[in-house]
Image (cartoon, rainbow, N blue to C red; front, top):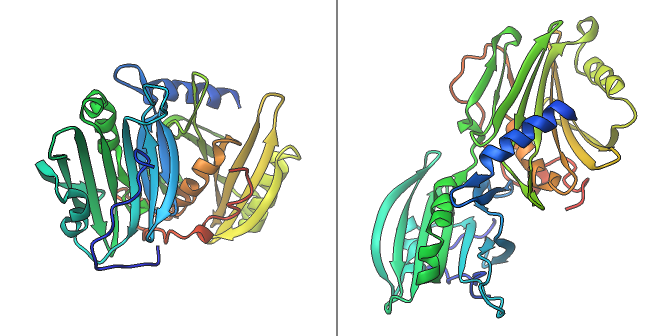
Amino acid sequence: MSTTSSSPRRRPITGWSSRRGLAAALLAVAALAGCRGRGETFLTYFNGDHGVSVRYAASWRTDQAEQDGVWYRYFLAPPPGPDNRAPVSVTLLAGATANSVDDYAQSYLAAHTVSSSRPEDREGVPGKSWVFASSDGKTAYRLLLVSRGGRVAGLYAQGDAVAVEKNTPILDEMWSSFTIERPDQYPVHSWRSFDASLGVPGSWRETRQFSGRGTLLVQFASPPLLLDKRETVNAALSVTLEPVPEGGGLREYYESTRRKLGENYQVTSHQAFRGGYVDVMRTETPVAVSFIKRYYYAEAGRGCSLSFEAREDAFPRASRWADYIASTLRFGNATGGTAAVAPITVTPAASPAAGSAPR
C-alpha cells in the first residue's frame, strides 16, 4: 500500500456488516491436511501482494475490498436462515501505518469490554491479540495485529456471541494458522550432492523423492487451495536437479528441457527471473486443463527446474506463492538453516505472467 497515516484508522466495513504418482500423493496429503476436528475441511488462502496466508473453513464464503488504503479479505460463516446474514465474519487485513499495534487497535476496541490480551509473534513479526465484547455481551470479537517496517497485518472477527462460541474451533484454526510469508524464514531443504537448497513453506509437504542416473526429483504438495465437490485441490511442486547436457549453461538447459516436455506444454509466457528463466505453460488432458509455472536455473554444468502445477481454477491461488519459493533457490554450499534471501518486495509486477491464467 502506498498510504501511511498516523491518525487512528476508521473501523472497516466488514463482511459481517456489509500426472499419476503425483496425483496419488496429492490425494493423500489432501486427506491429511484438509480436515481438522468436527469433520470440517480447511483451505489455505495466500496473498502474494501482501505476503500473508491463513487457513479457513471451506464452507465459508470469501470476498474482498479496499478502504482508506487498507486491503481486506472477508471470510463469512454460512447463514443459518433465509436472511443471508453471516452470523460470524473474519477479516484478513493488511496496510501501511505509522502507529503501534496498540494505537492501531483502538478503533476496534473503543467502547468495548476487553476480556484478555496477549503478545503475538508471526515469523519474527511482533504483535498482539485481544478478545473483547460489546457492552451488552451480545456481540463477541477477536483481533490479532502484527506490525513491522511501517506495515500492519492481522485478523478481526466479529459475530453474535452464541455463534462465535459455536465457531470457536474454526476461529482458533484461523488464528493459529495466520502467517506472515517471509521467504527468508522458510524451512530449507538441502541437496548436498548438487550443492543446492530451497526454502519451502512449512505448510507444503514433501510427498516423494527419488533419484537415478545423476538426476534427483523431489515433489511437494501445497495445502488444499480449493474444494471441488468433496475433493480438495492442491498445487504441486516438482524440483528436478540434473546435469546439463554437455556441461552447458542456462540456454542449453532450457532448450533441452523444452524438447523433453514436448508440444503438449504450450508456453504462454517466457521471462527472465532472478538469474534464470520462468515459463508459464498450459497443458490439457481429456479430463482437465492445468497451468504450470516452471523456473529454470543452471550453474557449473548443473541444472535445476522448479515446476509448479495446478488445475486452471487453482493456479491463480498458487502462482505468486511459486515466486516466493523460487526466490529462495541457492546453488553452492547448502548448509541448512534459513534461506539467505531478503523478503520479496510484494508488488503485483513481481509475478511473471500473472494474467496468463484465468482468475
